[in-house]
Amino acid sequence: MNTRFLLIILFFCLNSSLLLAQNTSKEGKLLQKPWAKTVESYCAQGSEYWVLEDEKGEEWILEGTEKQKKAWKKYQNRQVRIKGKVVSKTIEPKETNHMEQRPITQNPITGREEDAPYSCIVLKVNQLSLLNKNK
Image 1 (cartoon, helix red, strand yellow):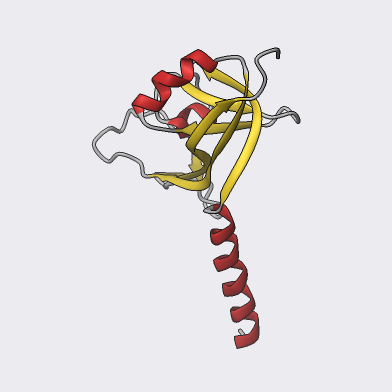
Image 2 (cartoon, rainbow, N blue to C red):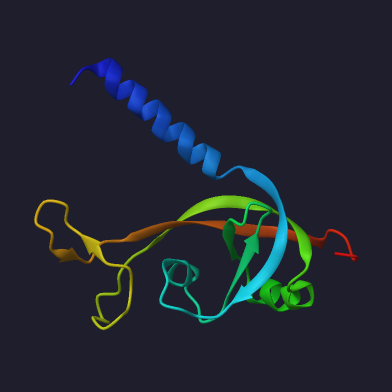
């Protein structure tokens, strides 16, 4: 493989990871979701989890402390602005629990299921504020 190609790939990899960790501000409806057999629920790593539904209908899985999550309840189903960072989260399978339910990863060559890490994108919340009390 040529060196120039590898440098270009390295450049894009480094820049994409930097873009993920940048501060951002998003607006939408704050929703609490129940546990379900979904990749979103697995990514949230809890029974109930919080999402921000933006104007396009896209849901952002929210990550925060237990103290933050308790405070979010008063903003549930209301329009909010969230300041935070979009981060990549990798969940390693637990070797001790073979009955754990998780998204299936298949080897593209053999087609066999594998115990591979699962990656997802979450919005790590630094600040949450109410947008408009009339909405």
